[in-house]
Image 1 (cartoon, rainbow, N blue to C red):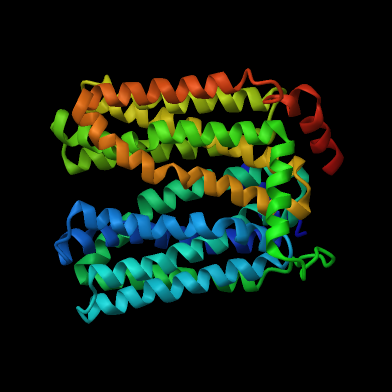
Image 2: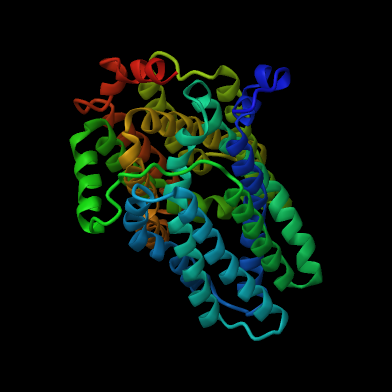
Length: 426
């Protein structure tokens, strides 16, 4: 570990940066997430402008991205528990590098089609499936326990800045040169990420059963989650609550701003930016505090419920500025939830099974996407946009609050395990 006195001791977000491997990881991730921001702009522009595609075509691209993750995440999580996690992360980066760069080249040569795009985005999603569990579970291996909260807060600051501000701005500028260049920039960002991971020193310890079949290891991971009430209750709650709000938020929130409130593209961008600001502010505060507090799981559920409930806000607002406030509170609440949740998992789940637990968490987080998007349109046509948003927010919040009262849901804070783990690992 590198010790650097001064700002790295006084500023919460900089404390984990004293660890060389963490610095390398987040140099690469900052650039990679900036590239992801360019991708979101470029792929929408490619489908709707260059290829004159329909919303159905764009939905197919979204399915191509998410479906491989649903299919591969459990296996990826098991692999991350039996081998050097850096290798999976590098493989994920290289797979995404190839897929995105090929899309860029085909765009520049004007030979890209919707069908080819869907196939290549499926490879992109597969790379994400390889990368995500290993990334989430490697953090405790590269920072000390006393800065674990700060380490998990870094993502809540970097991600919105890179993916919602800097990345889209760069993507918009690159579109002037040609859509393909935005994709190629994203591809280069994965190369930088892979290089930074190569330079990391952390190694996976031997003795994890590398020759054992993946199926029993996956079952062990599922069995562990089933044995931990506080984990499976949170995962089931995530499935239901995200089903309630994900489709309405992503689909109807832009409609409310642009149609019901006659907002401009700038207004919509400001709403997204306000959400990013909420996440950044919470990340900074959580990192500076450096502690989960005395009742972190309770706070997590309350923040979670507030984030879900605020979806209803877009069914009640009458001005764009109100939408800015709703977005800020929503994303800030979700960021607090993520910091507490990841820190709790990293402290309480045994290191040798953490990748499988993280893969289950990631898989369940995106499992509700297709169905949530599928039902939001018919429901909105039936009862109206505002009522759909209000219903979604109220149901999402109610499910989350109800989960708190399931016996065992708050166990880690009530039996002292979480506080004890922080002291033991410090």
